[in-house]
Length: 109
Image (cartoon, rainbow, N blue to C red; front, side, top):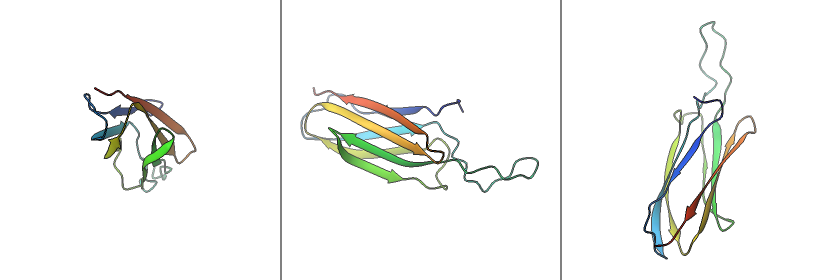
């Protein structure tokens, strides 16, 4: 894993007003549950991305609470209706308080 988790977002092209689009997200993150031990038998501290929030024009369009059972590098996909151009803003929150952000511009065809 890189030093800082890297979020990636993918949306389709050729979007028209009123379309329901598939949004796919992936963030590189170890998602350590806190239940494993290292080679010395010491517990590895919990560190997970525990929340994802997505807004469009400042209005929340998707949110998810992520739990320790989520795999490393969590992939989340969802659908959203797009009524016009704008920017999807993505915010992932880590257990340690770190916040990772990404945005994707929605351009209409």
